[in-house]
Image (cartoon, rainbow, N blue to C red; front, side, top):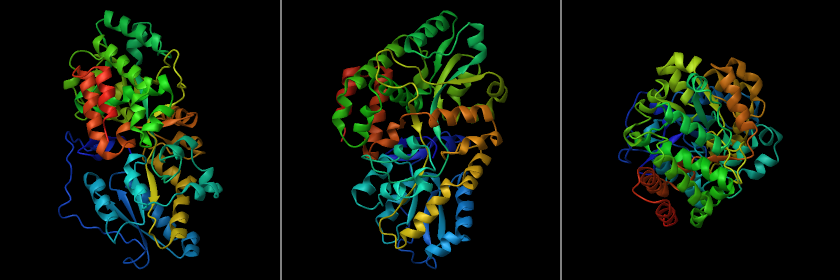
Length: 445
């Protein structure tokens, strides 16, 4: 799914919350929720149940299930799939309730990483690593960095089933031209650009600090560029001592230098992304750049279409001199995944259904709704997307990425996500020092 924001340990779609015009994120309680899954293929005439996050993208999954149920593959595997769309705000809670009941879903949508760790630890997931390796359709059907990003401990537990959302450095082409600037490829260049912009009375970066997760993107990229993807990999896999890596401290120090230098202006902590505040600051020329997920293009197209079409530029996050990270590395939301319940009675039918996600038909249906598929041969389909140039930039960015780091608030255990975001915010607003930030993260369990 799209990027998610954590609230009380639950995860929500940033993109679809924005699309619905919502300005708040409400946590659904467990009261009144019933598990409607059918693990073991019972209760639905032998059909396997698939839980999906019930937003606008779900129509692609509806089409896929209709196609699979009518296919020879379903007949051969002696199984069909029944889709249950779960409202977005209820999804994490309802999945957790269902997975602890006799009526758990056979197949379910997730964000990979921390969102499935509890199920992995409880031995409720099918380890798909060997299944993927032994099936050329699955092994060669997806971009390798995306397949890897959804897993845990080097094992794969999910098959990509929605579009990609890498975090991209967007910039205002008109402002850059007026100030005779080029997009930065190194950190020193970025700092030089910041100086020139401030002299011209322009805030270098828009930042929706009131939501906190936009601040997290800065740390995600800086830790990668300074220490390489292996630093956060340790943390994602449950090693809290990884927060003590020198790259985390250096990233925190770099963030504080940016804040103290005025890179985000003075009021960023009261500006939100979810209510359109930060995108408006950017589109109106008050800030020259915006580090944001790829959904920023659609956000701008909806609110400021002329800016989106004529002035919006995009580039990779720069390198940090002396750092171990490759400029081709990406952070953000690789995609969403289907995982399979270890208790399902018909794994053959489940695996046969998962293979459809690698098909060109499935990829075309994603492109038709404006998503960028993570399948290996999707680039040739992108001329049909709303902005082919931007779509191809995104696709190539992910295709060429040696590593794709899942957003930290999705990758860590849900119990860690909320306190981690609190510490990120304290760092940005000056309520903790870089060393206090590192110590606090090391104490999270």
